[in-house]
Length: 262
Image 1 (spheres, rainbow, N blue to C red):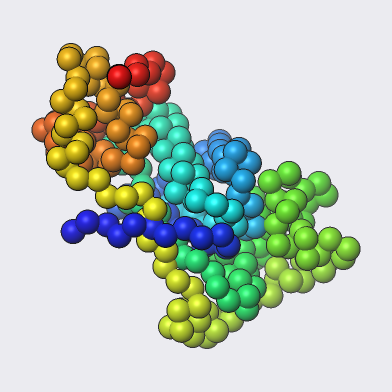
Image 2 (cartoon, one colour):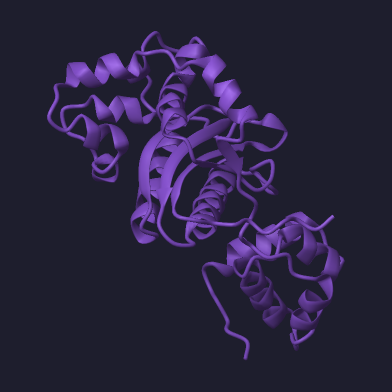
């Protein structure tokens, strides 16, 4: 069944993504920090504000603010580049993420408040730490640090507590999210699931593009171009009748040497 187009409008989005088959996607300190680096770098490039985030071993939560139709581009670059890094470092191939990211548009200010606390308290709920700021791979750790990183300086917490002490931020982040309110708001559609902006492209169109290749080298260049235009690795593999890991390898190698087909 074709995917619905993801409709993007300005505002706050709650993003979740998990490792394929619930596998670990952050194995060590270097992995977490590299994802944070990509997250902040591409946020600046796509005019996205990061409000809160939490990176757990097999999934992550982001609360971001989007201006313009940049959400899918941002998430594609973030997930793709991290997956390339992770697969190369840990000597694996194939999909890292369970699928395209899940996103919800936050329409209720009260839910936004609850959502911030929910994200920051993920490690506490999991029993990893006793207070949110003790977890090194979430925004709480930085929001309470002596010097806040640039990518969090426009966050909701930083702006709303700009003239208050770190202790005020700590008390806020130590508050427990109202689970009843969270459930009620979901039922009332205060949090609206946002479908994918990437338009489903037909296999026929993809096949006609790939048929332009005169040799294997040009075919590989076209595979990369099609992938960057939004075609999935699965569809490319199906059209070419090759394995998905083979397509993944072609895309990774293609980043180093791109041929433009006209």
